[in-house]
Image (cartoon, rainbow, N blue to C red):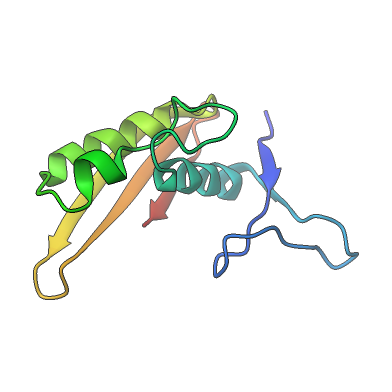
Length: 119
């Protein structure tokens, strides 16, 4: 099964055009990785057509001291909501020097293909 989605520009997270001036389309592994990244970046309740999607960034993460395990769990749960995702394993770490949190999510889709997303 081929999985497709509209391709987003990685620097602006906005739609892109292909060489012919049409909306660019991402396929298979890249499409899965992009949709997982989008799902994990959505704030809880802010997805216009489905307010049950998203991570509670405002209420349970930002300005709080959540464990990396909590963030990993939330990211994995969001990734698993995508029908193409079969397995999701998140890895999150906090850099005390820069006071920033970074993470990756390794996903396996229903076709058995593996992709990795870095956030």
